[in-house]
Figure 1: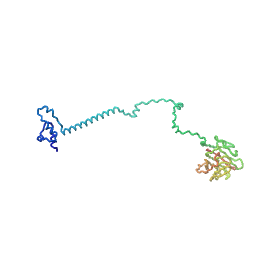
Figure 2: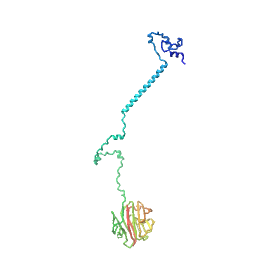
Figure 3: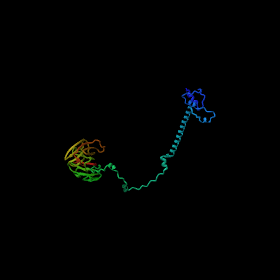
Figure 4: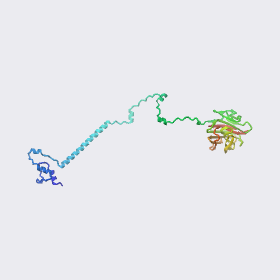
Length: 344
């Protein structure tokens, strides 16, 4: 509840004029508005000067209403100003923004440029315009290695099927000439077959070599037919690292065995032996290979597949020599050679 002073303050609105407050003219000592009314003379109803000195004061309710109106007006002004600013910003952004054009539209809109005619380069122009490599690039580039002439050449293959005639020799195949060691009259070529036929009545060795002296890998394959085996005196086979009658490796068949042997300084040594039954008048194939100190050989009937089993050994007594065929024959023996293949 309000006290009497607050009630009187609300109802007194004009200085110099007193409403009936029901207080019978009693003025409290602590009311400034009542003191002001008591000190001001009451104006007459027709007094002009009194009307000019009259002042109106808003009540508490009126002051509160004016404050709300002012706040609302401030909000409205802020909203209007903000809206105008946003509209101006949007208009400016839309004015300066460039239209978005896709790559395909650009390509369609722009005509393709005509190809420029380039002059044909010459060796002089290329050498003149080619930039020199930077020092870092030159350092990173590998140096050209000198050619090593000591590297062995790729292996070559010489195949002789004796499709020629020859007497007292086996002639020449390609640029390779057969070299006969022993009785040359025992060697001939007749009807596409290389023949070894002894011309005397004593047992003897007959040797023919082909190709240059080699110290690298050599692989020889030969197909032949022995007309008669006189075990163990007669045999026929291949030689590798042949130097002379006293230095060579040999792989041969004698009708009962496949033998791998060596002859070093005239001293013959059997390295390996395996059973191999061979029949006179039947064609057989022997293959003999040497690589560094590894020797390997095997034999099979010529009309059958080459076997996978090898007779192997290791020996380094002979490191260089030629390849060829060597037979030990008795009177009445003979050898027919149908092919000789050398890879070296």
